[in-house]
Length: 328
Ligand SMILES: [Zn+2]
Image (cartoon, rainbow, N blue to C red; front, side):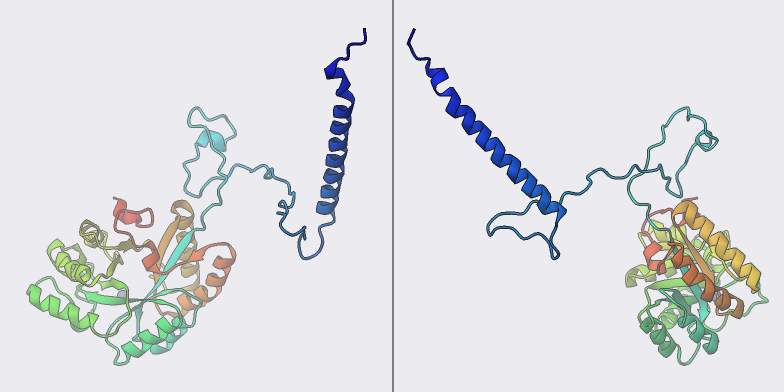
């Protein structure tokens, strides 16, 4: 039969065409491969108008070892190497947020020499000035210029009558107008501060009525409140939070014992709290032991990945992990 099969008659040229396309594709593929292998210095250069495909790189990320955030509630069973009964562990692939520590230097301004030394430490520190030095405004300006954050260290009545809190102190048994006048005097001594923390005040900060008066003025001025927590009875942070004021709470006092070993131990404690909860606030004073240890601890802590932050960074309008005492 001579009847031509139309499908057969065009089969050969079609196969040829397919082979031709395949050959071109192979050449292009080899050429592209060579291009990526010999990536010319200065980046790939392609024919004008053609988009160069991105460089071929290994797309698969390296297998992530399970990591736990510092405050993760890792089941004890998993720590001992047993399978957890429930709540399977999830490998955490996002980078762990660096822990944050705020170091506050209280009582600045009176001892000028040691205040200058505190200002010269690597920051940002938070420097809380007592308002009594004649040149407090100048000292505060120098601290701000060095990159530190400023607080007014407002003087409040202590439980003990043996300690002299200084003039214009806020007292429980004076008229509200008098306390308000004293507060405004203290807040007018220098500028550039973000908030207030209490100097002494173990008696005053446990008094809800008087603290409300102070905090109302802070709110009006848009200032934050750091509760130094000189007394476990302080109601300052709790009331400040209820008023929507940015609030922080001291975790550790560094130098109640102003000795090198004690300060070092208290910084380790601060770091431990921060590793557990994400952040911590420590208060020290312009004392030799504190300044000596901070001078070595600050750069070492930064090298360990700890982020030093000003206290405003840890102040919150709501109970926050950094405000450990506020959570109660
Ligand atoms: Zn103080």
